[in-house]
Amino acid sequence: MPPFTNSLQKLQESLNELKSEIDKYHCPKCGVRLESYEESNSATVTPSYNQLEDRILDLQNECKSLASKNKEYKEKIAEQEHTISEQFKELDRLRDACTELKQGSSNELEKTTSEQLAEISQLKVAAKAFAEEEEKLKREISERDKYIERLNSTQKTNKEQYEKSIQRLEDENKRYKEKLKSSQSEVDKLSAKLAEKDRINNDLVSRRLEIEGVGFHTTVAPSMSSLILGGLTSRLTDRLAGEKVDLVRQAYSGGPDVNFPLLVVCVNVSRIGADAKEALKGIPKAKDVALLVFHHKEAHALPSQTSDKILTGADFSGLGSIIDLAFLSQRGIYECDMNNVGIERVASFLLQYKTQRK
Image (cartoon, rainbow, N blue to C red; front, side, top):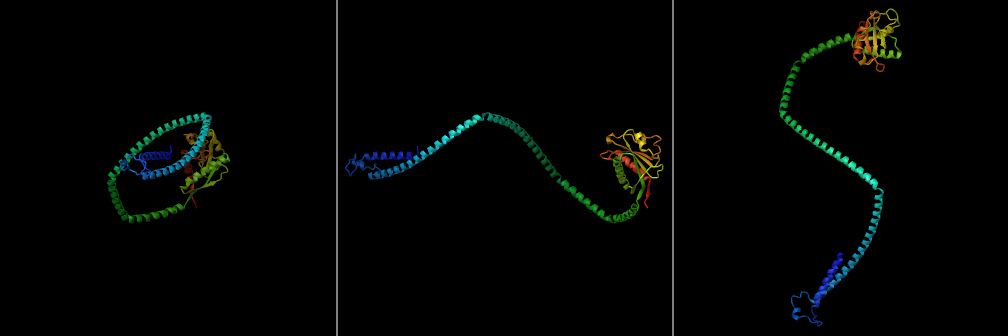
């Protein structure tokens, strides 16, 4: 029930009670008899008749005001009830649409719900694993904190010892500086002597040696010959540079006489004896000739027995040296033990022919 209606009812009830109270008395002016004169003048009668009439008028005016407000309130209620009715109609329409949508997509929703439940199950498993991992990490962190605390305690305990060690080292350093200062004059003398020796050594170094003409002979294809000879020349030049010796190449056109070191290249592709004889065809078997046997193999597949232990016949006895080397068509003369030993042996063979440069 609206609040104005309640107030109006209460005022109406109060008005009725006042009228009933007035009816108990007779008006003195109009001659209407009171129940008793003493009763009319009794102190128990609180309001006078005029006061009661004024009160009634006030109440009637208030009732009119409340009735007007109650009418306005009812009109608003009617308007709101109409609005609510329209909203209920809209809700009914939406409910019907939702029902149709629900019926049309129930299978899809069930499928989606099943997938979501499966995903939730997986997430729960992952969450459990994460919780276990988190607990493990917490334990590790706790252990690390304890370890750090022990280290801090140890560091604090050893701090004084470190400081004493540093002070001792500083004292020793001071003594060493004093000794160094006292021996500075001796160092200056030694430096002067060393400078003199450097000057003499530089004079000696400036007089370089050279190997007058080194011949190369090969019967392999030009592309492979270029690969082998290029790598061999580069390695020999670097090795002989440490001896202050220059390598001077000389062309060899064949002939029975060889008066300079000749390096004959033999590529081992089948039987080493046949390959060596083919490489030495037309070459004199002289001490100035070194046979370089190149093995086209990886380092792990190279022969363990050297070629000079195999080539012992009369066709090879007069040679100055038989030396094993290794190469690959993609890498040339690569780094391995055989090549390190072989280059050193070739350098030793050539150093026999070094002469003073004029």
